[in-house]
Length: 345
Image (cartoon, rainbow, N blue to C red; front, top):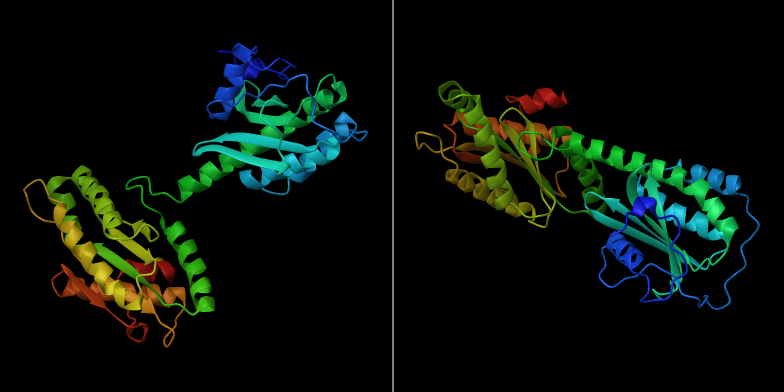
């Protein structure tokens, strides 16, 4: 199979006679049966290209892409700018990302056999490709793309790297759960949306009972295994839309985003408490949880800090009562006692 990094412009080849080139372009799009080559038949009545200096296109692409750090928005701006600047009826771009190919098009598409593939590369790294109508001998378009696409590739690579770093900051390296930053961002966003839409919501604060004893007796590697196993158990006990985070140490929290209803928050907390029973210590002992629940209702609405303090105080009350329990409190009864209160103070 040929290498996309060595492919400049897919030349005009008869369909079915493209050999190695067809396999390469088809693989790049990850779509069986698609062939990114052109035939001698041109797109009916294409718009003539507007005079466009290659450096001017490069500058226009750079200006458009510098205004955002979102890969989707960048790719969308790229296809719009290229299509408008070169007077093309349509442009389609594919960007390879960690989560799969990202595809964006501008204009009315054409049959698969009437197109040209332009690789999008950063040095020796294949980033994706740009699909255009059949170019024929349109050397001015090739020259313009030669200057513009490396700039676009660099900007897209930076955007993907930025997204990766953000994802790392939002993911706890030990458990794979969300971090405190993710929780705070999600809670602030949820507070605004729920209050505007007049819908209740709740949070669940979870504290592992006697976790210091676990670390002291069995060692920190066992404690780490317990936290990882608890994270998986909690994720299995809540709905897909809920946000499960580790706030630090042995403190975890769940933001109930899905439609559990205000009365369902305690039920979710009970499921979490029961799910912890599958996590066992090396001596066969069970892991138990002290869980606090707090909720915002239409009649009683508090800010994020107060809601956290309330749930944390409820978890602390469950621990003082002996642990392995769920306590629900109204925000009117918020009180200190846990590290969450100190974190938001």
